[in-house]
Length: 507
Image (tube, rainbow, N blue to C red; front, top):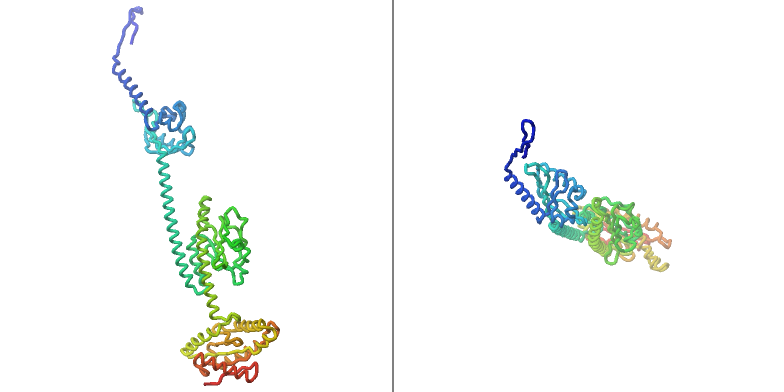
């Protein structure tokens, strides 16, 4: 430091120089500058993207790796606000929070966020935010060291997708195994059903398990194939009337599956009162070249919270299962129907619908055994249509058949549930009356003769009936002896005159 020197009068007489040895300080400054330069060089040449910001969040450092990854040159970033200008909107708040913590001395490690390059390419970055201080320890900014983990995230995503796909595949396999087990169990039960009504109950039991949370119904064509009737319903499907005509269902009309998607309500079947929200499927039940009915399934209401493509995938999966189930149900129902038909033909007379003679003889033996055990009586009436030949000769065999059907229909309608009405021969009928004695059986025979005579055949003429009556135990104790006794009584009724009723003589 040079200071002017003066005399007493204030005149300048020289200079006083005060020196200070700053060698060490200069060395320290030079060392500090060297370290700073080395740090700058280190930052600039690091393989990791590194940036620096000051306390206002403005960029002070931007190394070459950061340039390579982002596409932004260093001159394009210096002095600009990092968060506001280079971070995506959805992550601005969270990145700013990390940097603000570092500015308060709270350092953050391994914070992940996406960064978009100058070319708008998304890169995944792992950030470590470190507090930056001066020589005196004052916080002057933040140094951010990043790591480009884009490829790693892609690999993790692919691994997750693979894992998810594998999990979905396992779940689908488990679902298919469960469905196969249910179908097998349902099939075994359906094969054991004695009639269609039992089968409809089995379907109503298993359908909700095969299609959980999926509303649906099973419709069956009636015997005339002119009406479709609801026989099973599960869930809470949107249905119209439970009985409708076949042409009201597109699947029955076209003879093929009818799939209605959520955006095609114009193809709605008329048997629905309104369009299900996400669509439905109708599948015709066809087996042995015969259409039996239709399986109707509506979209799972739980689909409401899922994207459209997921809903479409699940509807497609449901349709594939429904196809298998409809074929399975159709085949089993057709087999049951065939068994019922064969059974009917085995024990029923095809013309009148009454039981045939074979069934009469087998059943009468069983009922006699029961009467013996219970010490009860049993009556048998054999009825003969006297003027059948007259109908056949005057009006043709079709007219004779019509008379037989008329009498058969009458006997079906006028027979008690526990009694047995049969066609005994070409022109004869038999009625077994459980628990009836001779007096009650005779009164019944007289009433039948009178009521049948009052019936009008299609030709307009009345049927002429004679009857023979026999009862257990006074007229026979076996089916053969009891029927022979009734036939003998019928013979005597005919001898005495047409339209007569006779009772067998006691043993």
